[in-house]
Length: 480
Ligand SMILES: Cc1cc2nc3c(=O)[nH]c(=O)nc-3n(C[C@H](O)[C@H](O)[C@H](O)COP(=O)(O)OP(=O)(O)OC[C@H]3O[C@@H](n4cnc5c(N)ncnc54)[C@H](O)[C@@H]3O)c2cc1C
Image (cartoon, rainbow, N blue to C red):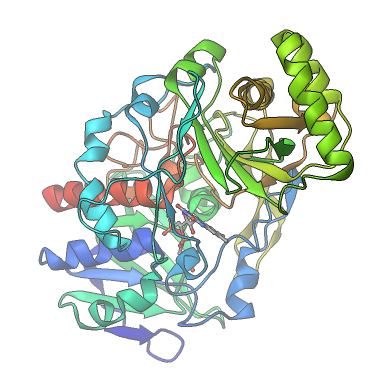
């Protein structure tokens, strides 16, 4: 049953499980756990529709690179699934077998743990059973890039799809306009004794449960932990600890422009770095999307330029080709966008700013920062892709200067994929949650969502976070 906390103060004294946040992660968990006979409370801070009062609670300035944290999240029932695009690409075995080339470890769990839940996660986002992840184009000849494989969800809007279940599932109570504003940690028991919830007039009350799960998205999950004075007093959240650190995004770098050679099909293409490329360059992974902005022109200046290039590339070596390609100054026929892995980085973080929101919680600030290793990834992908274009006869690329010259700021946008702020690790010196998504040092607090990602790969996060959410539901069910 969905109730409105603004007018219905009908919370029970205690529940088996309290889940905070009704986006894809929270809704998935709530339905699974209530379906197993647990008394579950699902709290949503927003209403059934978008409202400015709720969205304003997401105000979050960026220092460093711009994250657009207010625009890239939605704070109402269904969460950011109310405007996600639905691109689904699973993690790969190599995401779990190889740690990042920085001083932090990779995933502490095996890839098989993700795979166990793939089929169910696919069903949740309405991908056909047994559908295989498909390429929209042929592979490039060569060892560095292969055709990318993905599927598109309709995209599933979680609040719409699961409206009936949220209303009718026995054992499940959903309260909208019910904002979690504090987590009360009891150092004596090592447990969260209660959380504090508030309506929009700051009328507050405590809610008790045996298990609590934060599912408020990667920025808010960290913010909730950082805001709790009792977690700080209990030594769970410390300045030297990892809460909020390693904020990661997928890098949307404009690599440059291109002209396709005559005879090449004039359609969009998507490529993905091979494991061999990643190992050879000690680079992150990356999707490279080739989009035509207009039909390739076969006349005038562009035609002359193309024939010039065609003749030239037979005569000069690779290094010269790349140098020539990167310096060449002509309008392109299409643009090359990317979705590139960022490595975990302690300086890239969510922290608390001095201001408070309308409910009295300190606002978060995101400082998004890239490391030299990330610049190297962008450069390797850019240069190798330009080389592949030329070598395979696909076309010719003019790279943006920022791709190969680190002194020039990158032309970069975020992808709205927030990750890593409560990373999973085998020990507290490397992360915030353990292999079961339980917060280190707190017996009954777990975290769902992409904040637990140890590394982000170059796969869209929602389907993988659902795989982990299903695994978490299994774990909570086994301990409660
Ligand atoms: C424009 C856009 C396009 C995207 N496209 C893709 C894509 O193609 N593929 C992909 O994989 N991902 C995509 N994403 C990312 C995707 O939307 C997120 O990965 C996903 O929504 C995360 O789910 P979540 O449940 O962890 O968090 P959210 O969806 O953010 O849900 C969190 C919920 O918690 C609630 N909440 C927050 N604070 C509180 C509080 N204090 N008390 C109570 N409730 C609270 C919020 O209201 C919200 O309902 C896209 C994102 C955007 C913005």
